[in-house]
Image (cartoon, rainbow, N blue to C red):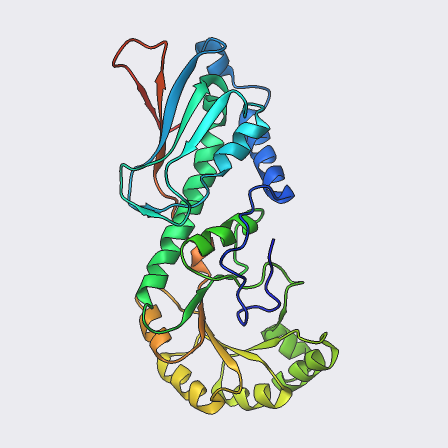
Length: 312
């Protein structure tokens, strides 16, 4: 996994390796299957004869940006079905597609596919939702030169995958964790006594090359942030006119990040005010899942018959 040396200042390479083989992803899938399957999938065991073969398609019911299709292989691998099923991906992650499009086809033993159906749908539709919402924000600021960033406001356990989905939507990543960079927030400032003191303490102790970012919520704090040597100043819940004033005060002595109160109705005006980055927590904590379905066609079924499933 590629990480950024600091939050906001140097987003990781957009060619970062997909996280599907990462131990945390494998463990997440394992836990999700244990939660869903429990002691065994009694419905599939009682209705599907062993070795029943067929094919299935993963289909989107709405327009979306694709993210997470390789998780099909991870889920099937944890069900020990990788050799019994052949997965053909029809679109690459990061691709915008229309409702009714096929993301992937699966062919082979239907038993394990039906057992893993709900888990793979839950995960992929959530990641498609993050990528789709991110693309809407990226499109909203097109032409401004501003980068859309995510935050650490992720669903516990899903951070690596959600941040991957943000990249698939055209956004960039903030810190992956507290060990990734210095971001001095209001409580750090309160504990240190002032913005300048907090920045100076961090600057004096930070390893060579580690950028220091500090959050301010008033224009009057910007002078202290610059005097302390901040590399990045996070403008918390500031209006566009305040962001423009901050840009004039700072010039190019530090990078500016705007955060707080950002939605699709406000992001364009915020970006046009002159920050380098706009961070949006709702990319990961509030993205609605995309409606996906797995359409199964069993070879043993009567001709023309198929099962369409949303896997309740």
